[in-house]
Image (cartoon, rainbow, N blue to C red; front, side, top):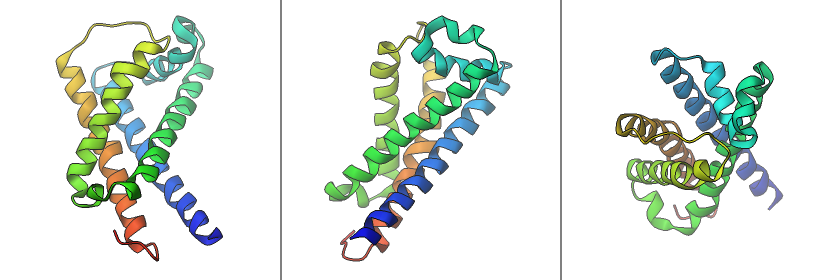
Length: 160
């Protein structure tokens, strides 16, 4: 039992680091393409806790943004690995599962978490929303789907 818990923890950590890094890399790349400062983008993440003060906090709040980003990615990873074995249909099609989970993450983050945070409000932009959704699907949904499938498929005593 202890080995199974250790293996699950290892799988979660690996999936978390992959998804968190892919998502952060995509966000930084998108920010640069848009001609914006990646440090300000990271401060934007910090503003979820600190409000507008995060933008005056310098690089310290950019690092806080990285920490918050990875914390949020960890929570989404843990949730996925917990629900995956309880919903057999998730293992039927990894691509569809990744798209659905990425869409779910995007909806919860953009329609519940961000509005409840201290992030300064902004107007809805369909193009940016679709880009953000695509990034979440590719960087979080798909990697988690494939990595959870692999973990539960090779785990002894499972039927996935």
